[in-house]
Length: 429
Image (cartoon, rainbow, N blue to C red; front, side):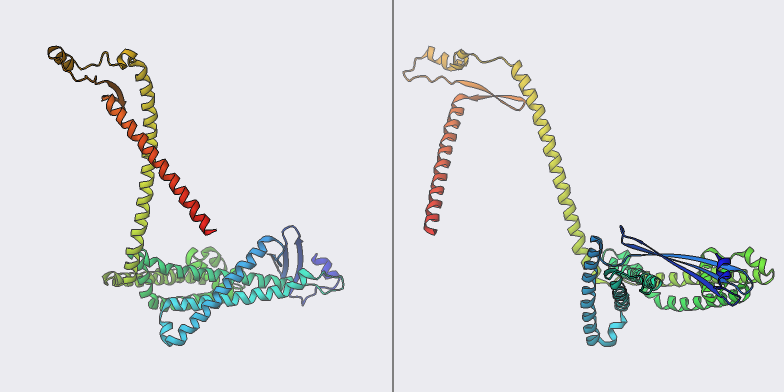
């Protein structure tokens, strides 16, 4: 490909780089894939290639796109309302509003929302004609690289915004337990010292990035420009420098830079950071917990959760007891049928009272006859659960009569209620 470009006069000795742009559209997914292949010609004769692909979705073709649009409008409506309320608070409190770290995070969060909204509107206005107006052969080509850059910026700012949003959510964890509250107070107490330390740390990293760029930028790709050098130095804090790679380029300066970076950035700076955090932790642990809001929240919420859990446990126990009782009744019913079969049946003569006549009454009647009619106390056998209880037949008859009277009274009362209801409805109509 390079030979063809050179043969047709596209490249010569003054060419610095060659770019190839390709765009592929998938109508099923409503997605564009923008591919840019770049070939950089170095002054010393080598060629460095780089291929970058971006996937983008434009327009509101699918149902998910419409849902996302509705959610975006809802979120930005809340953001606009929150911005106006924040402006009113600033106008009332003046500089006192900025003394709270949470208020500062709110302002940064709103700022990121506005930037993301600007990029979304810009992308929509740029791609509206692309999705609505059909293209013609004589139309100029679309710059999908700029579309891809705007699309990538939306994702980047949304990522930073989500980070700040979840960091704000950590503040409310202090209302749940005093341990969270203490950790948040440690972070707040050490914020000033950590900010100064962070500034010093980035100055040291910038110095090493510039040193590595000047000394090894012409030989190692990681240090070929100042931006990559700074990012590579940040990565080296976690993974360390490539000692063999630096020594191969310069056997004297490579080990010196590597050991000094290891000592200053890893041993000295990071241990200083831990010392600052420990100092703030000791200071906060000696302080009294004066956050009454967290205590009131804990006193109000935790008993509520406890009562809900107790009610759920009671319901589960009741259900368990009910199931066990049902199982016991079924088993007792089976035992009942078995015992009824084993128990001797009562004959008609027994029911008439021939075998259940009171012996005492019989003996007294033989000794001294009584003119009053003798009522035979008939008895029947009544079974309750597993015990056999002897109940008089007279008691059962009285109970039956009482139940019949009660049933008739209930029926009469229900008839009266129905009659009164019909009369009321007739008057109302």
